[in-house]
Length: 319
Ligand code: E4P
View 1 (cartoon, helix red, strand yellow):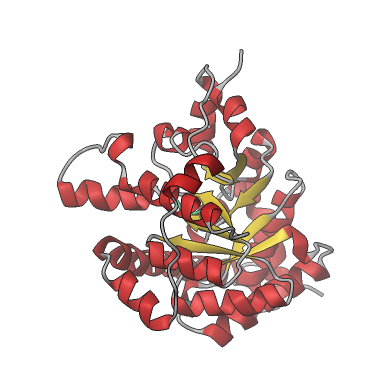
View 2 (view 1 turned 45 degrees about the vertical axis):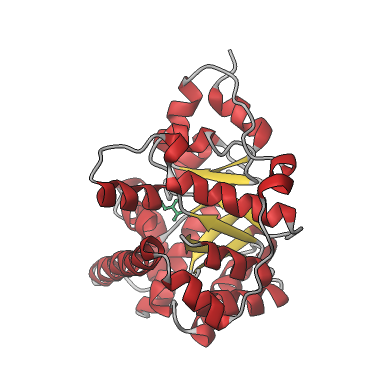
């Protein structure tokens, strides 16, 4: 019996959105994505404690190095189960710091390479701020590929494509969350879902205007949102939703296509910093969710830092 997951795989590249290595091994996706919140959860999981301990031992008392090490150790383990790439996120504190983001990305890539993982297997995740996009533009020139995250507005998507980044992760669920709260409703049907509509619009624009940047729908709350984007280049999906898709029988119809994109992609927008800031600021959902997303990833990264400090106090240093 063909499941929705099998059918979806014919239209889009399926990616696992998790720091749970056993879930990655189970679902065997092409790529995997992590973020600071997912890695905070996994770092507290006794099954993966050895990865945290290794990072702490190798960092010899340097908490920032232990954070990088933890991200890279999880990334390496994940890569044992995927043929493609793993996404590793740069500290949200650097969201408005071009030079700082570039330096941190180079450091993560150097650490991956020291552990035998080539840069072609890693996507560096950066917040889709104006500064994040500029950092990504420079990193791409160095062969460091980027996945632009916390993407909520059309302005962010246009800026990323113009900068020639490898991939963007437009969020569906957090847009849905915002509109659900704003409209004071329990649910928004998928045909009216602004998160789904955002990804469909970006996909159509990119394809119509020939951008190479790949679109990976992210942040899903229900399988209907995923199925409504069948045909998107990639879809990153949490294990609980992968499970639901695997259990549901039935074919999945392609929803996004080049043919539709050519009809609906809209006119090309010239993007510069002023236009970006103006357009993004005109979108209250996107301004709220970008700021909130940076704060949330930062809060979880700080929790992770505190966890590392407390575990380091109990971990013998490397000889
Ligand atoms: C993936 O790249 C994103 O970090 C993730 O999908 C966010 O999902 P959430 O909105 O459920 O936290």
